[in-house]
Amino acid sequence: MSDIPTRTLGRTGLEVTVLGFGAMELRGAGSGRGRPVTPEQADAVLNGVLDSGINYIDTSIDYGSSEESIGKFISSRRSEYYLASKCGCPVVVPPPPPGERAPHVFTRENIVAGVEQSLRRMQTDYLDLVQFHASPSKATLEEEDAVATLVELRDAGKIRFLGSSSTLPNLADHIDMGVFDVFQIPYSALQREHEDSISAAARAGAGTVIRGGVARGEPGEGTGAPETWSRFDEASLDDLLDGASRSEFMLRFTISHPALSTTIVGTLNPAHLAENVAAAEKGPLAPEVYEEVKRRLAAAG
Image (tube, rainbow, N blue to C red; front, top):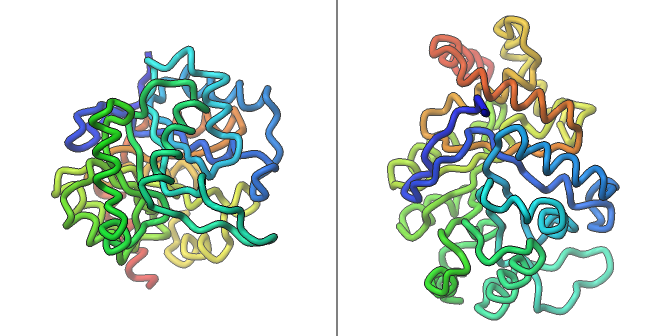
């Protein structure tokens, strides 16, 4: 039995583990942006995620072989996890010129084709959540009648809830639209621009899925950026670790946000997965430590 705490994902009513799994790391080298991933690695990490008790998995059409790996290795365990993907990713559009990325497209044709493709790839009849990718503007969504397309797919039973992977400034408009059940938002102790927006989304009844909750890994691990982690030193946060690693401390800071539903963290390393699970099982930081971290970060500018 997992000891990972759960929280309610806003108005969806889904009880999700406070630690979710971000499957972007499974995209593979063929995507042009990832590291090589063997079938054995994908199998081990995905089943390890479920064996650890994590019940929320986030992926995307854009993430190379991620969706296919989910379908191949854990579709037989579909009842054990909530599955979130994204739409607007280019599916039925011409390929971009060499060296360029295709823009996201929010037409009805492309959204429907993307969801149908995700269902086939992940060998499932439904997706628990589909999110607009890349934080499109309200004007773009209205011009393409994109929300109505997701509503049609929901009414057809192909998706259960509507979401958006959003950032400022468009996030504020998305919250005000009142149509989204869930928002995916970037946030960590070292990147706090969206801290108040997470609370605003929760007040509006939406669930909040946090990405980047450990600043995408420490320098030298994953894609952790030294300039981001320099803020950790400037705020003298090492004084507050009390034996924890920086990554554990950061993860526990993230889940200390009272309006957070879950945070998605990706890895291919079983040891890192175990460390993340152990950190999540400890729960939020003590309230006085949480407040002291924010005070020090504010003082450090």
